[in-house]
Length: 210
Length: 210
DNA sequence: TCGTAAGTGAACCTTTGGTCCAGTTAATAT
DNA sequence: ATATTAACTGGACCAAAGGTTCACTTACGA
Image 1 (tube, rainbow over the protein chains, first blue to last red):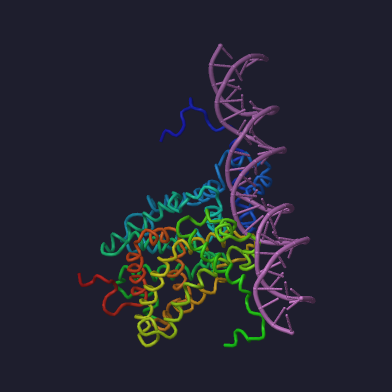
Image 2: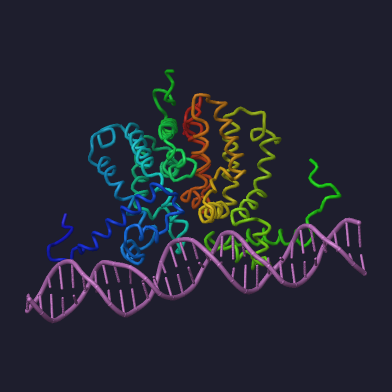
């Protein structure tokens, strides 16, 4: 994919170095502080650059968070599109949906602080126009889940159900649970809801056998 | 309940008048403007009082929003505790759950802007400690839903499932839908998920008959 | 009528996302 | 090697909003 001719301007070396430093600093700060304590300025200081540089590269606080999420989401995206079943193509829609929800929960667990920070940034930003639908990662996840639901049950409101299942992860009580290491519970419950919605032929719940 | 002896100081007349004015102004502003455009100061101006008065009465932006929600939530609370079935006691847990979700969606539709504003306020406030579990209305709704789920299906994680079902309403894509008048879809999908989770004996979906 | 505690509101503080712009520097053409 | 240039840099600056303070006012009971 022709992403850079040798002729067109590449990213300057110092710029690349600073971009990396900023992302790393933000990641570290978010790992050990709640989002509202991680101001853009603090990130800049930790990265050893000026605040202006951060905004120059990422546009806004939301942009920075989005970039951070993109990095992590890339691996999952690949696995879904080209990886082996049940995550990738080849399994039934039901199996793929459950596998995907598991994977998303796993990733959300690793990124609980980041998701909260992104949500925080969205609501704190000056221009009010930032809906969650503007987040390309959320959109791609939603499209995937929605498609799987629609494939298995054309008669349900797949679009909306997908929002319910995924939106949960951006929610504060669930985010707290993930942060506290309870991700197994979350994955199990999401799976229960999904199976129940799709009408599990082997019984609606995971413990039906005892 | 002895809420005011004739001897103890009642709320002063001017204070009561101003409180009403503030709540009314906030309600009106939220009806026609997105939350991030409704600053506390603007509410104060619209109510014809000083900003200090608002903070004196409501403590914080969150407090104001909470008070506004309380007013609206009171009727529903009554209906659940003492009203006729299926909302009130007397019906099966399944019926009560579905009825309650319908009612909550209806109320969330009327208060879409308010809910968004409350969420916005929570994340914007200075002290970071404001979790959603601090909102008494959410807590009471969650307790109710959780209890109904547990009653119908002791084997599922009722606490978590209730968070998923209710948390959705605080979510931005769903909030937008409610605001756009699509509440029927939301209620239907929530019902589908709830019935699926509880294991509908008559079939997992609402359209099973065509 | 009088004392007082509650109420009031405008000025002020602080934080933070975001903007500006003059100086710096890495990449390229000659 | 040097000149050119466009991108990059970063600290000063700005505005908005939540929240605090405190001197002043006023409703209410005695």
